[in-house]
Image 1 (cartoon, rainbow, N blue to C red):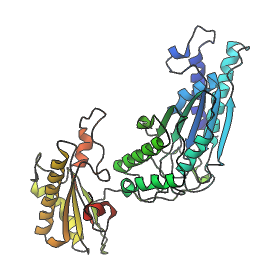
Image 2 (tube, one colour):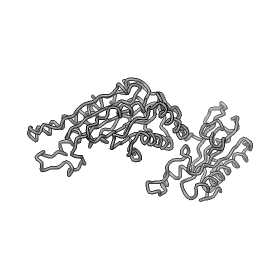
Image 3 (cartoon, rainbow, N blue to C red):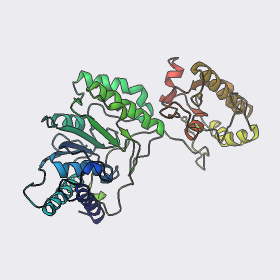
Image 4 (tube, helix red, strand yellow):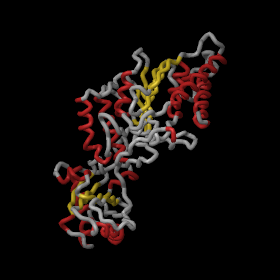
Length: 419
């Protein structure tokens, strides 16, 4: 076991002893700086441990480890790989022996905490690819039904690359999610999640290795997909299961080379609008023009700085002149006002960009214009907080125009009139 990982486990073990105090009954773990329930728990941990994933951060679940080490229960650790139905480990954790001295009990708790951390960090993927649905199925099938609280913790990107529910292109996860879930229903592969009274998912959409990082809108679609899936499986806490914290990429001393590498999937990208030196023609241009490149006057389709916008689209125009096929412009807006009005405003803004392209020599008939407003989750990020207030840092990403080939899947519903 590598030193940095052992250190984390030792910290957790030390915290467990601090939480218990002297074990004389005078100190209550609930009153310590660490909030730990004073009952046994069944803790199930699902891990994504491949070359494409960061190493799980145990500090996120230190309270769970402390509770399990202090009051006992059951630990199940499952690896999200192609053999998750076999690649898991279960351990009964006994509470400290009340017949021992307080000091001996504290040492026993430290030992249990270290054991729990070691067992979690020792798990590795045995096969390439990830079957997240199968891993969740394994979790539901191996949940201990003994009246104790069942907690499910997931460290996983949520990107499944094999089995029923396989994903290959996150750019269209919004369009495919209903089909994926219906397929799972037909094959009776919806895991029963009703036994879990608490679920926390860390690292949804977080990747490492060769896998490109998904855009926020891809991650939001992954969340929506799994929220629906969990609800279909009887989960009552699915709406609040995703934790926004991310953890650092795999530590330098973590032996990633011993792990299998998962196939990468396509993700949405915000491309560099500079074509570079590649002179090879392509029929699949893809550009994202955010507010800081083509700002519009508030609630209008008039460019705030036309000269700046013309400069921004120059390299795009040069590339378009070397491409074939139709081009689609789709405008998006921040979440504000009437949805229909936002669609029309975004269409007008996209048309303003079309006028720039046409005036620079791009054939008018090649350029098709649509408005998405703020409701297309494949193009828009969530830009409001839990109270419905606009988050400006995210809103500015949605005040944009997307340019892509008519062959791109992102625009198919617009071309087919289904938007």
